[in-house]
Image 1: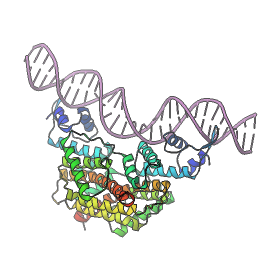
Image 2: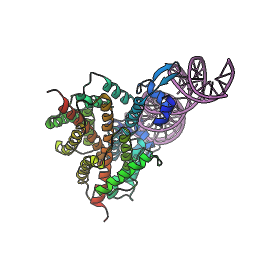
Image 3: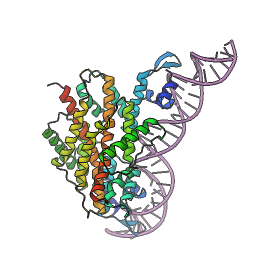
Length: 209
Length: 209
DNA sequence: CCGGCTGGATAGTACTACTATCCAATCATT
DNA sequence: AATGATTGGATAGTAGTACTATCCAGCCGG
């Protein structure tokens, strides 16, 4: 198909598709002449992926590019699919190394992960996000003990178990990418359900009737 | 204290503090003269709140302003603390009303919430986020049944129960604001733990050793 | 052979969250 | 009283992100 059809079928303007090609999110069409190129279903599929990551997952174009290139790297095995993706999504947080609050938070994160026995790399960006959250909670006057984080960790573990249950040894790269996008989307599901559950719980506890 | 001291103690540049005042996130200091104003601990506290919501919660300045003004409104009771905040954070998603995929997703969300028996308003923005996520999952080729969403919903409910357990009848507005900031921070904790759990689960399932 | 579509390049836009500069007033210090 | 730094308030500028618009030949289908 030509770019106009790709545009129509994906619902994205032609200019945006060109932009994604320029940015390395979408491969070029196969050129048949100087001013002609062919696109196929894989391009459409990729655009759906990009849209899910951008609009739902709220990832930046740069993060999406990192994810795509990471998961297209044949050196990345299935077993570190999520690790590689998490690293590609990155921290977008820079942690000061000298701040004592930060140091303490990092140690608390390390201790929690050790206690849970989770196999995660020391560089996992989510560690930094977690540490940042702990620092913020402290500054807000809350002191989150490891015990308080337990229920969150257990919920997260159960969901991850459920999700990885869908992975098979023979899962293809394309499938893996789709699953990864799905897991990013599920993050939003989790947050949305969390907010709705809060509304419900707070109404239930204090509400009328 | 003067603005320079507030800057020093909060770690934020004076210009940024002025900006937050202009934007209505932070109240003005009490003016003692044309070029002098006094700030106190409540300003410092508010700055910590803003930082937590901005840097950790990744909320926009506009969303933070909406949250603050909503929770300062005496018409908002404790029982809809989280509802009001969720509404203030907003959808930042505009849903097409004519798309059949969207209509189906909305109905699925409504059905799920009804089945769960959650007391949430029909306008809750998280409904839209959820519907958007379901549409994206469909387009990615996954068909999330209500049953598949169950574990997520249950995890979210348990966490919300735990969080609202901290609320008391005599909780002050200032405390409520802090708790709300904490809950936004906890969203990030949840997502970070989710990513770490995925990395662990995927390594455990396919990894070496 | 001609009008509309195309690839490729370049430039411009809208938005967000700051950041910088300027000014006159005022305070602390000399 | 003079002076130098600080302040509130206003205005303007910046950097980054994600597009969006325009332009220009070249080509294809009619």
